[in-house]
Image (cartoon, rainbow, N blue to C red; front, side):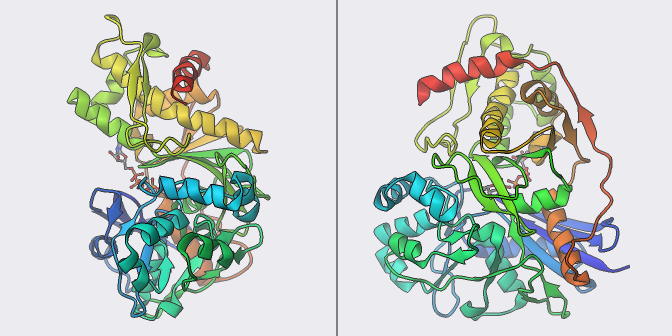
Length: 462
Ligand SMILES: Nc1ncnc2c1ncn2[C@@H]1O[C@H](COP(=O)(O)OP(=O)(O)O)[C@@H](O)[C@H]1O
Ligand SMILES: O=C(CO)[C@@H](O)[C@H](O)COP(=O)(O)O
């Protein structure tokens, strides 16, 4: 049996899966937590990766490995390959002002959408480089290279210390604001606009490019941004919209063309096969449910049971889930709020239901935006930690008004990385076809009231 390793270095944890390269069957796995916060030293990811690899039985017997990871994190290195300062993550909003400046300096969002398929928001790497240049000039002066979390971990696994050998892939490069998924080229002019000078950036590999080798000689694949890996890991196809409830909330499809949305609501990322990944991302997803469990003093299973005791629409109780500001809509300084509190709705069940509904409404708006930009969605494929919640599954079916398919709980980002590794190991023009386990399907009578009342309240905040 040929084994391959897939890694997901996500916001909250690192997951490692060891799978059969031929069938995709799970053989071993490991997991380790990351520190909390919106800026993290990459050494913490490296420590978690080592722990998760050890838990998964090591990599000595794998034929290939690939690393997927949280996107956009600013990993800045000096000329010796040392980390200059902790990485600002995708969910750090301190560069929101830099994002607004960059939009204005290039002449508007449409210019950015046309140039690189995305419009600056605090999540994207170049806004963080601008923040660094303006706020930490001494650190900025030391920076020789910039890369992303998955690039850096792949480089570390290769054992290299030479910044000229760092590699990346299309999907993650497309979230930086200085690489275009449409032209497959860097935009050094935009990097210089943002940071003030040029930097060493990783070579962007194709779908089965080799980024280095493990100590056992096995090739390291190009890796991927986590959402592109999740699409590849679930095997979602035409007509499927993937909704991931992780630290971020994401809704995305596979597409042949980039959406070019001048509003920035839909980001035109690349996927791992040479195509595109139109996506809408919210800053508040699984952590909204975490917060609700804290508020109510319950665990996730109890929160789910409570939520399902209240009716659709929670009798008018609406929770706007902007607990860490929000990315889509771009409201970096917003906070969460509760509306429609009455004697009838002031109880744990209504609050639980409102937290699930509020968290999902932003993603339903995102799916509408994807459809406005050409996507077709006949089914929802629901993944991520939040997809383990029965209430999330059932409310999603009511809210999206489409069949919701929930694959067996797993690590679909890491699975996508493992499938990429199998493709690298085998070669060829097409990726291996792995047998997917039968998903559970949830269908419900659509409940438009949920989104109608949410929209009314959310519009008051814009
Ligand atoms: N049964 C559950 N119901 C709701 N949320 C859950 C459940 N299990 C885990 N979670 C939440 O899912 C999140 C982790 O999901 P994951 O997709 O691994 O996140 P990330 O990829 O961003 O690190 C955590 O916030 C965790 O509390
Ligand atoms: O910013 C994005 C995508 O643009 C997020 O999807 C991050 O990539 C974090 O992913 P998770 O940790 O939530 O999986």
